[in-house]
Image (cartoon, rainbow, N blue to C red; front, side, top):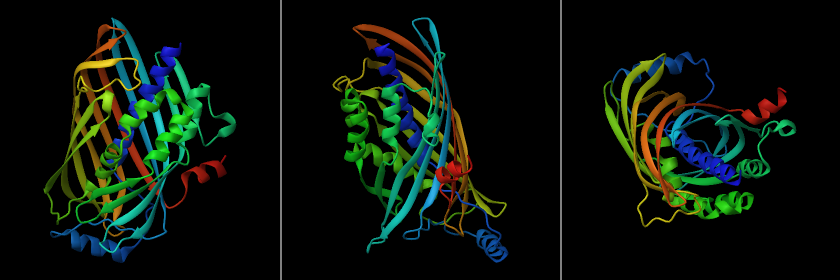
Length: 347
């Protein structure tokens, strides 16, 4: 039972990191407003080559809801293990300061978490927005989930390149999670490095290019998410500008994700197993982004990623092959109202 609980927590953490990567692909959405004049200007502007730009206002927060659904099928030692997860994260983003060199500082805060996980027929439920009926998560997992709430980061972005220059708050975040589960501290230190957090955040802003767009224009973004003893995830995002769709700029995105196992010199970092070798690749992975150039942000986004392959892992000196097939979909929506407060008020 102890091994099972630890493995459950570690699997959750790995998916959590990938979910943040999924989050970082899209960016913002907002409520629609009727503005005929701006619509006409948008159509005129979009008829020729023009530039898309992010827009921020100091002190004006926006709120984001990200829902990720994962179906995972594993075959381990001739046993089929099915895992399903639905995770919802509620965030706030508050532009804090525009620096003299044009860079922006924004605060990202985790407002709430909702989990519905089933691993091999063992359900785990948690919902921070309904504390009276949070769910059936074990004390250790419940405390881990609770530790996420209120965590925040200060993200510095360069709009000239859409690179994330700096992230502050990493040490506080890791220590907060480690206090909830001290056995995971070595793993958390390795997979939640400052570099990894920057890599997670940067694709948020790379949904648009730094130069002008016209129909058919393509641009790419490559990232490497190093999760220490869990391995590396290499992503290549291929964006294509498709022109206007109901007054919004439509961007199609395809992604190629591949997995590299950790090097043999990389310690297991608190994992109850070691990944010896692996071949995991994505296929038929694509999504759509609708960008509102008047507001300078993303209106809607969705993404689906199919990942498959095999891993050779070592547990207690015994090597085992794991076959994996995973389907994951991510949808993001953002508004000017706090979704957690709205959800609580409506109950």
